[in-house]
Image 1: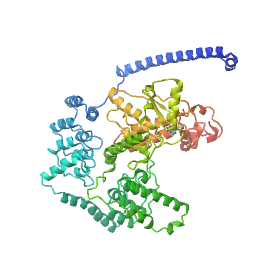
Image 2: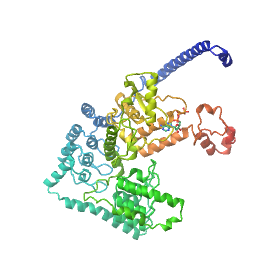
Image 3: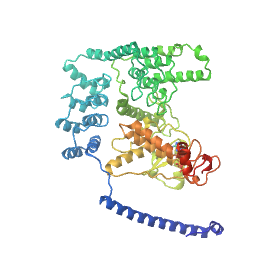
Image 4: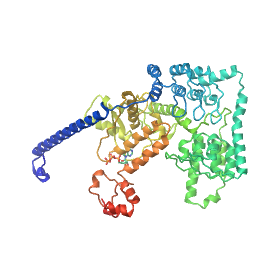
Length: 586
Ligand SMILES: Nc1ncnc2c1ncn2[C@@H]1O[C@H](COP(=O)(O)OP(=O)(O)OP(=O)(O)O)[C@@H](O)[C@H]1O
């Protein structure tokens, strides 16, 4: 039913509304009919191809990993009976036992040991499952593994499992008793560990003597300086720096040696790098400065001061020479907290730190912070940064009674609007309404999307964590788990008017899901980023709605992909496609 717009506008209001309603009904009817016809056709094609409806299939190796993670004991037994390989390797090169150690699944671990798996299997960082069990403090698994495992096996950093067991934990006590009972002397273990930096120092000296390049990168862009700084090998770092190492060198993830020293709590290395004019303001791949990821407040404070000094230097380059290299950090280093004698458990391979320790520690920190805030002030107006937590963690609001509007006692337009407005003014932009997540676009950057936050929302079961506020990451997490539970594709429906934040929400969902794609996360992440930038309908600060492609307003850009296309085509190809200059096309 087509009606002329002018005619429509000339009608009285009531008549116009009735007409428009009829038009809508016709449209919807036509839409359903088209859909029905389309589905029939699709079903026919699928039947021809497969003879049955499409379903997602998982292989046994994936299914057994999932069953171990979710403590689904029956499923583990069934899968093993159906032929799942107990020697299956997981993405980190570890075994299923590593997975049991990570997820504290003693039942599955026992079954796997009974089938004869190698309890001393080492993953790509040479971690055994005892290393994992200690790092995650899962004492039942430690006890179970002691029966056959060699607890003195070293990982890539020369650390034995005990080095990752926090002092005073049950895992640490079990291991210490075991070592004592077996006559292992802790002092000789320490000596063994000290040999590592000595060996590196000797290797580096030899490299320098032979005229080698101290800035040589490996396939991950990592240099000797990165390694020395992450591990706290001060003598090695000093030597390399004195022989022309680039202090601001970045690896493939844009991590500088300063990022690593800060992240792994190597206070002296942070100081050394700053004295060698390391730039404290460089951003990593995930847009973080070294101060954002500092392992201790002390390091963070040192870096923040250095950032100020650096900024001043940038404003007035002449002052660089006026600044003594030692002075700015001299005063700080005197307050250096006493270094512990214990083997340093922070000297972890980066991937391990991220996947094992960071999540647990952060979660504890964040929940601590959230509880603290909640008891201080439930209205969350007076948010204070606690001593033990990072800024970005506290910016997550504490859970509140109005997190789910479906639970309100009075549900009217005005009560809903009131609650949403109240939340919005608290920067609580996400609200649940039952299963639906409502977002109010804040049009400003909120520190609630960092990798740390996404880690917090990772859940083993897919259940919403009650100590975390509503968030797009929790929806992404739920979809991820539903994928496994229902064994069929999941989809997100993002609805809202133009500019309401659908594209951004979609990006956050993808970001969270890429975190789940464990092994090749960084490459997957960058692939996704590339795709989104090509498909982007917005360029720089211009807004280009898809509907505007047919009518492009003055001074607004086209789709990014169009410029890329024009850039890549030869003159002949352009001619063949009737393309002339950029501005001639809408
Ligand atoms: N969660 C958010 N936090 C901060 N700013 C946001 C958020 N979501 C959206 N924005 C801001 O709003 C702008 C528009 O959002 P977005 O592009 O996601 O809207 P959209 O719903 O996809 O619009 P359209 O339907 O026109 O494509 C973004 O460029 C960004 O500046």
